[in-house]
Length: 151
Image (cartoon, one colour):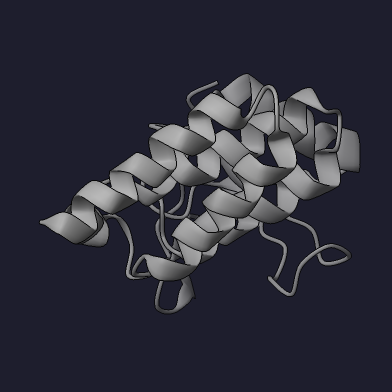
């Protein structure tokens, strides 16, 4: 219980510092991420805060600072931890980050929602997929299911 309280206090401190002392806030967030389990969203209860909230704080900072590359790297870290982006990040912001870097959208790895996940072979080690290829499974890559065109 004490560990969860300490973790929550660090996160609250980082949120408070992000506008006045961003480097200190980002360092606190990085330390939090290193100390938290990386097994996806189910592990959040052990730490007392949601891993996605820590990532979101950092991504929003870099987005507002107009540093799309740093925001992109953090979004990719979220994806590598199997964190669904939509509860934490505004889709327009994610789209803008990827558009700025010239990255093509692909289907969301977890829920099949278009535009929530992206890949660019020049920026990551992931294979590039189009939305029509299906959605990406955490274990095997692309699942054979083809997404419906909702647009």
